[in-house]
Length: 311
Image (cartoon, rainbow, N blue to C red; front, top):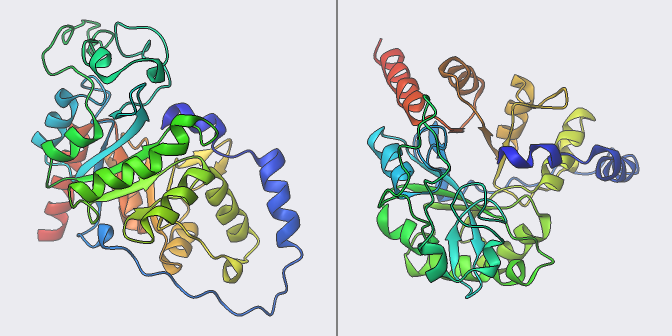
């Protein structure tokens, strides 16, 4: 997610278009009807998810990372998917394999068999700069199907990465839906994308069966309507907003904004949270989902929360 932050709000174009439309709205419109909160969020808050399995301490998106997050007792994972040359959905963030593996080139130019031969721990370094997971048997690229199979009790927050204009992007939402249905995982998977069109495609296919997150455009619209106090005119399709705490000086984690989201039944979530104090602050404000690169900090926060509850 953090590689997308620079594109999180295109306020110079998108926001101005939304703002112009909002100024034409009549103030006497009736309040919007609230959406039901999907089953995905029925568990006790807060959910603590490991970002790509916990990319600060293990090779991202590998069994090494996901197993480590499970060992620390986290509720689930935030992850990403892309489509291979032979149309398999893999757990992978970047459009190319260069940054995280010993390979080179686009994901969509590789077959799954070829990708499975790559070392997904090749570039990872520990705190001392050592490549301790190079060649590790569990530092391999996983399919989304394998992820659901390996962790049947964990929540999965998955981001469709392929651009909607690409061939891969055009078929990925349907493939995602079919895999979720195959594993009967409708109640434990949240599907989202920074691309508005991908979210719309998946919602059309899933017909409300599976929780969905907000695109960049949807979050931008929500923030503007909050600032202009036009919440009654907001009709979100997304079940949750997942955001950084601040973007280009714009605070996105104020108590009032979080309360506003909760009043609209939009579940507030934040990513890039690598401080126990910040986790606790967000929880006190009413945040439901916290995504961290550090599963160990997630466990510390859960222990702290348990102590406060018992005291």
